[in-house]
Length: 64
Image (cartoon, rainbow, N blue to C red; front, top):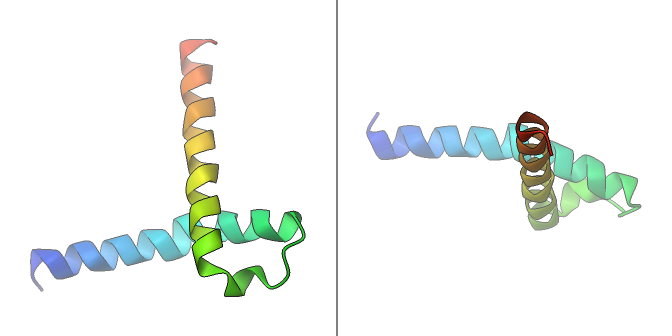
């Protein structure tokens, strides 16, 4: 397996198992029908969720 294939597999794993599930959950909480069918919205919402989590963790560490 070459490096590009390994990176692709890792990226796909992270997107499908780390980023999209919180995005789908948030879409469900906001009342979006069939959040499992809205893949792009789940991706963007999941990225925003994790960015917010990182921001909160940095704020906690820095004592804001």
